[in-house]
Length: 76
Image (cartoon, rainbow, N blue to C red; front, side):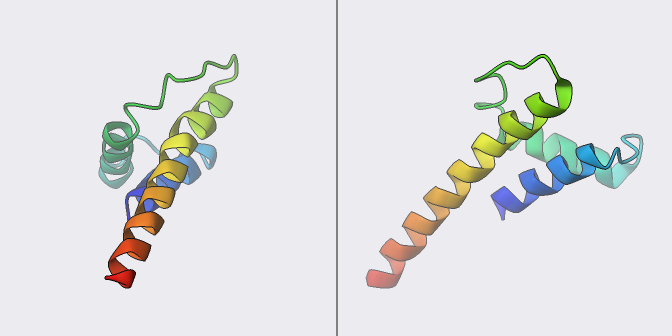
């Protein structure tokens, strides 16, 4: 679910969704909070690359952690 929210924000950003829209703003705020630790890990000159990599690192991390936790719970 966490990776979905971040992935949705990346998609909305790349599609240039109206950031004045309440739903888009909510998704952006949630994704920014979730990826706050990874957004400035790397810096790029192009803004779209910064968004994709900065938020993408967090999305992949949440996917890996979620998969590990689900596997651990399944084995219990």
